[in-house]
Every structure is written in C-alpha cells, then in structure tokens.
Image 1 (cartoon, rainbow, N blue to C red):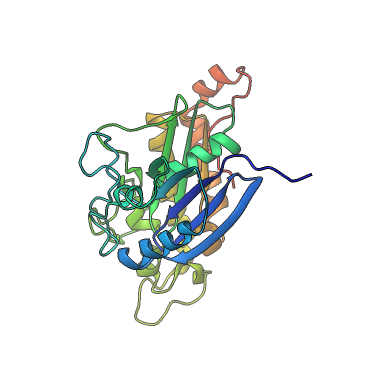
Image 2 (image 1 turned 45 degrees about the vertical axis):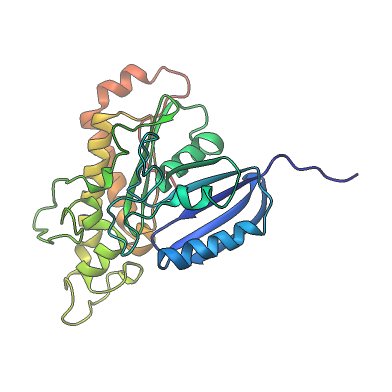
Length: 292
C-alpha cells in the first residue's frame, strides 16, 4: 500500500551564522533538510529560494534572527529592523518570499519559533505559559503567555536587558547598541572579545597573549551571574511556568550550568518560595528550571 503524507510545511530558520530549510509536517515527518551559512542577504535568500523551488509545500513558516517588524499593519511587516548583523537591516523577508511563492506565509523571531515548537511538540505541551532562552551569536528570549507569543508595539528584546554584574567584572560588553547588556556579556562574540578566543575554546586554559582577559577561571562565575540576572528578571515580571534554555554556552564554558543552577535554586528559594507553595498543588505545575 502506498504511504500517504499529510500536508507539508516548509520552514526556514535564519540564524546569525547559519540557516536551515526543512520540509515536513512535524518532528516525526521530516522529508528534507538543508543547512547553509548565513552570508550577505542576496546570496543567503537566493540560496534558500533555490532550495524551496525544489520542494512542494502547502505553507511556509519563517523563524528569523531579529529584531523583526511584526506589526501586521506596517508597510515593513516581516522585515528585519536595525540589527548588529552587517547588511541585514531593512531586509524584507516576508515580502521576498511572499512575492515568489503562493503558499500562505507566517513569520516570527527565531526564538519565539522555538518556543512555539516546544509548546506544540516539546516539553511545554499542555502549558499556557513558558519561556525559551537561546544563547549563541546573540541572546534571544521567547515568552509565551496564554498559548500566544507576548508582544506589544514590537516583540521583546529581553536579551538586551541589563543585569547586576558580578563583583570585579569590569568588561565593557560587546553589544554595539547597549554595551554590557546580557547579549553583550555572554553571547558567542562577547565571549570571544572578553577572553581573546572563540567561546568554544574557553576551558580554563591560558589566554592568547595580549588579547582579552587573562583569568579564564572566572568565566563560569561571571557567566552564571549574568544568566541568573536575566532569569530573575523574567520570572519576577512574567512568572513563566517553565524556563527552557538552548545554549551552546555550557559547551564553551563547562562549569557554567552547575553554577547557574546553584544560583538559580538559591534565587528560587528566597524570592519565589511563597509562589511555589501556593501553586505546587496544581496538577502539572513545576517551578522555573534549567532544562536541556
């Protein structure tokens, strides 16, 4: 008997360093997948367009690095706003693909796309509120409340919040807009600037002579403090049921996750004890936590 497929959806994820194109109907039905580096807009969008032309799909979803204009009444809906990635400010993603393909199109930030995927297929199934954090080329936060992304006049940029710094940490930060915001402290480029080498090479080894900070032993403590700061602010303001993270950072600085967990557990005990006690009897309730 011939196997029949459900309707297919094409998905594009545009990240700071790479893009992924995928075809299927869900995690258990991936029919094709392609990965390519993120370069200039013309070359990158052209390569993604060529991939899509070889596929048949009923709808197209785009999850992209931001910030994005997501106001449906805006003439620039689906465009990238001012970004740190050279050449990408003002690029009209939705306009580009809508003009070339007749399928229905939806667009969200990459991190909100991940948060929605967790809600549909992952660990946030059945939850009305959760938060997804990703750390890589930048720092992104996807907030879901009532089953929908949290958005005001524009989507949030919680990765650009400023947080209390660890004692003795005088790094100025690498964010061209805010200096020492969270993204300017713990993103991949920030770690490279701070320690004089790519983040994945920071493993308590001697620093490159004349570049960055010489004391790598403080990296886990400082990064843990910065992460604890953003967790505290998110939960104090939104109280999401579960905090997810997808972070390459622990692979770069091996001791960060235990340090963050210790700080976070302490924070939970002191700040949210009454909230947890009040809600702990609810079926399916779990306090904010770090998860893979």
